[in-house]
Length: 306
Ligand code: BDR
Ligand code: CA
Image (cartoon, rainbow, N blue to C red):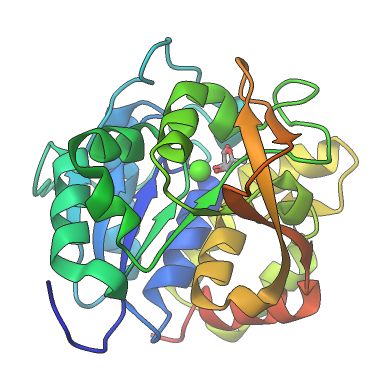
């Protein structure tokens, strides 16, 4: 295990338009080195999600380039349910992404997670932006190593608010509830970022476009174009803008003071319901967001000048 004082991030993701924005925020954050991206099936298939990671790497070219590992192609015990919100390809169905080569460093994301947890220990933050399948498989191999990392921040759940795929379940929890339950049962203390918080983090088209106009170029164009699909869908449904679910998880991984936390014991229902239960807390969840401060951080970093 390293003893250096740097911070490292491993991001487990199913990109996804808001996952893409979360990765862009993470890659522009000097507080840590994003060492590893692991891909999980969720918003889209494993194949499409992996392709999207490489599209985003090509668009942003972070330095250092992270290792990319593919992982679970389906939830632990049920068929994959994908999310129409992000388009068929997960990134808004643009037709002209430049072709990219896929340099997948490993096809064993759970093994990569365990290895990073053992090597980096408390200097590692794991940020889970999709269903918890890869994490659950990692915990099965070495729960102590996963428990020993600095923090595990996960976007998922709907504690005191309605769900977004069923009346009481949120997408990531609903796609693989068994995985989320297994991670909690293994004693991994999650910092959970549920819909209770992410619905307070709404990105309006005007704010995004004003930011992108300040740093014109291929990155700004790419962001403007792949976010359009989600913004249109939200506006069509009468919403002010898009919820920054996954970017908020990255935001609070960087700076936990962006939200107010509540420690609570949750049990996971069969459809991915995240229910309060009496007893010793097993998570803390983000309840109230300092929205102006979070949006400032997000907009300052999402599209740096090249
Ligand atoms: C979560 O579901 C996905 O569609 C988003 O990427 C986010 O991780 C929100 O419920
Ligand atoms: Ca996601």
